[in-house]
Length: 612
Ligand code: ADP
Ligand code: MG
Ligand code: ZN
Image 1 (cartoon, rainbow, N blue to C red):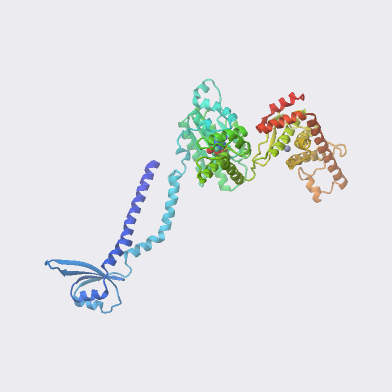
Image 2 (cartoon, rainbow, N blue to C red):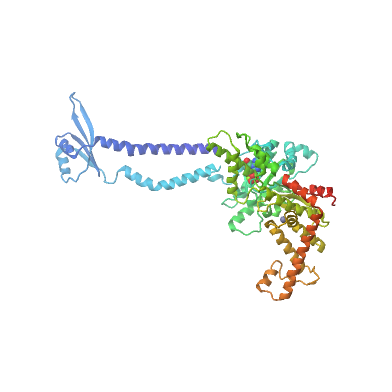
């Protein structure tokens, strides 16, 4: 029996019961009392009729006496009528009945049908209701009690999403990376004929609301293949083995519908590293589910035409096994949108919104750094609601301004940056990037951004190590420190004063300098002696007196040397930036305009200004 028929049967049974109950209640609660009231007579009339010999039968109830009469009518026929009276304390009643010669019977005092049945039903009613709702909920979730192990993905059997890349804004780079997968899904044979191997699994990584789910749907939509989607949190079930069964089911379904996409949203819910200790039962269950997922991923050939996509905003907690070749071996970063991206997203979401003549999407994109696609969709919706409330037939710029304020209030932390703050951040990050570019031994700059991050930083400079480094020389460490202080140096150079924005840089630089002094023996003043107790704790321990081996004089020298190293690094960064101030201006300018620029562009700007 499939879901549909079972639901229908279930519905008609419930309907029947409700209807019968309703009819019965109507009769007992409305019709009968009405009847009783209509036929009620005073006790005296009953006695009169009894004496007159008109009464035929009597039923003695606990509360009422019901009796019938027979009267001769004018036409010679007989008329029977039914009456009732409220029972009164009448010791002579039985005698009178006997005298009158009527047939009579008594009802047990409590056998009133209504009270008996209601006495049973009312206490049971809450239980019945609870049971009914639980059952219905399970029915809605797509499974009766018998079908818990069936995958939820079954219901959306090959959903054709209809979403296109046109519906996704500001993700051009990601779309390029997904093109290949779309080509593959359109014609898997073409790839297999050539012996080309495609990744089985693609992991979309990025903060919440950046459109990962949307991109997965658009990939399926562009390729015109079915989209099976399930969320990691759906797998977390109460019974052991259910999650694993679901995974098996999901893949079975998908394989029969290939080519297609299987999308696992919030994969971190099942893919968390297996070593973490948690609630024992839940952990077992999750592990089984994860193991099943790994088995399934290994269990089919890439040419079967099933591409598995997954999304997470916490890639660092994923089990390493998931990221091995043949599984999710391709990761695609989906970041917060740039100004241009935000403009595109706003355009997409205002497609069906009537905008007033004063609405300037460029301006809106400008003042919303740090907003995700979902935040922007939210802003548009909020603005439209405000316009409706104003009884206006179009959305004005003022609606948008208020909407942004509301969304910001909802997000806290994410403040639209004022222009002067943006300028400062641009110089700060530009400083880091340029110093990294100009110094010979540092890792090349990968990208610089002044989009505030979800973690609260106002911008960041990303460097890419060319190779894994196991050993760093003193010179390399000093250059690293200079890069760390490059942001602060730029701020001092351009604005003449530091800001709080460099606090984290200072912390990292100081930490590095201290280790150079106490762990790596890199200063003449202290020589090749290790002064650290255990990594990270040494300073604290000397402070609270746990370790007495460092004399106060030595501690003073450690502080002094640390300070000297940091100051030298800062001077180095400052000198470098002063010599290349024109380049710094240009980098900062580019950042203010586009918010994110690549390392190649930094290199180009530096070269154009005569630096190497
Ligand atoms: P994620 O999966 O990364 O958390 P979603 O794909 O669920 O984000 O995005 C939620 C909603 O936000 C989408 O349905 C869409 O309306 C909007 N959205 C997010 N990113 C974009 C984008 N790049 N372009 C257009 N709309 C977006
Ligand atoms: Mg999502
Ligand atoms: Zn910094």
